[in-house]
Amino acid sequence: MAFSNFFSYNRYIVNENFALSFQENSYAIQDENGNLIGYIQEKRSTGHKIAGALIGKNMLPFHLDIVDAQGQLLLSIKRGATLFLSKIAVTDPAGNLVGYIKQKFTMMKPKFTILGSNEAEIGTITGNWTGWNFNITAMGVEVGSINKKWNGLAKEMFTTQDKYVVTINPEASFADEYMKVMIIATATTVDMVLKEQSK
Image (cartoon, rainbow, N blue to C red; front, side, top):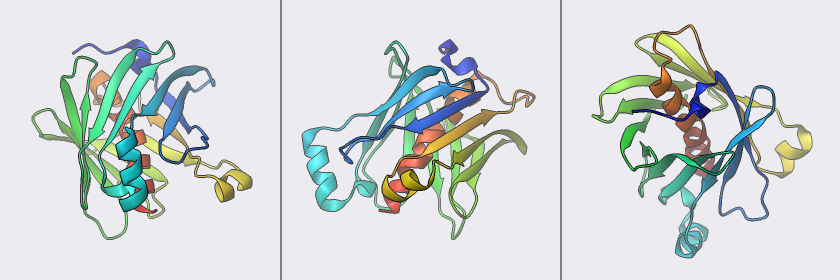
């Protein structure tokens, strides 16, 4: 499976965009030099927005599209309705399944597993107790990390904007193109799942 050169970087900045509507989430993606290289946009119908206001978004499905700076679709990230733990499917532009991100039950630290299209476990995402920083490992080797950046007092107090730095370890033998795709998908997935559960 061939992927866009969008996934050739070793560091990404995923910056949630401020919007007047809290019904949808959107993110800008930059490289480590601050150049805009893509977007992540949530897709919600009117009915979905109404349901989210009535029963809470944490149980509803979500659909995110990752596109490059020219608007070309790179990945879709979808979760069905859920009562407790999330299982998120990642698909390529043709709709082919790339893999899954599955939330695990833990008492303190958030944890997710990365599954291949055959649902075999290929990686683990483990957060600290604040849910702001995550290590990503494959076969016991750290292949990447997701770290929340401080946005300043005003933004942290009065908005829900978040910024994450996604780093792929270039020396890890498991940090191939496939793992990079899943790590980028994970960055937004973690933000969506944990943030909505806290509301």
